[in-house]
Image (spheres, rainbow, N blue to C red):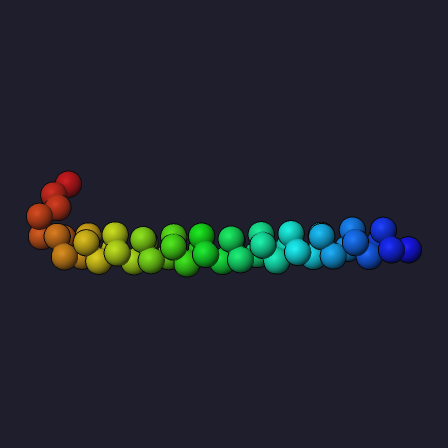
Length: 49
């Protein structure tokens, strides 16, 4: 019975770590997208197609 609890504890800890990593990566990607979009809007007069 003890082994099952240890397995569940390590699995839960791993899931929390993965969740935090996904959250941080998502926030970072969002900030980078906003900065790139702001740069495009600032230089939109210079863009020609």
